[in-house]
Image (tube, rainbow, N blue to C red; front, side, top):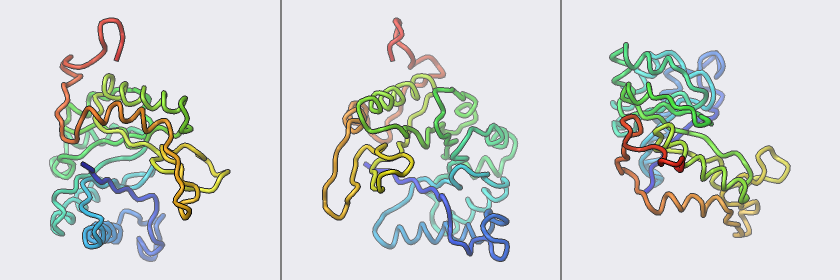
Length: 236
């Protein structure tokens, strides 16, 4: 099973109209662009997108924009696509708004607070507010056995300490010329994709130790209630 999660790092220069992307990124233009992108994915055979982020590691905009985005997605038939915020550093205002702003809470229903590199820091208030707490970007180390060990520890600790049930690795496949920042941090190296050559690296095997024993949609025993956690002697 595959769940698809879309996140914009940048958008075409016309987003935001005369003000440009910097002055009016969170505009109706951007909402129209996201809806069109989802429709394109559906029509070209890429399939449904279950989760949609706002913008990578940038301000996530006023809550009214998120509410408008949710309503626009519903009107376009994308009721199944849930929202993730903020895709960067943790922002407690998302939880506060969920608890105090009914329209915002409705827009975020079924969605998640997605944090990059949470470093095993629990945020139990996220789940108590009815949202998922996800690690939407992690790894970023070389795809050797040392990096694989780091990734394995992240998979375990993110759940045992943070009650996180979703972790996204950067990068699953590395197809970039050498010398670029992040060189060789992929789970699979394909630096010459035109040749058909690729190299399966160590983190793939470490990932399989989790993914071969769980499935998308499983309900995990809750950490907050003490049903999951460390073993008596500290093991995870």
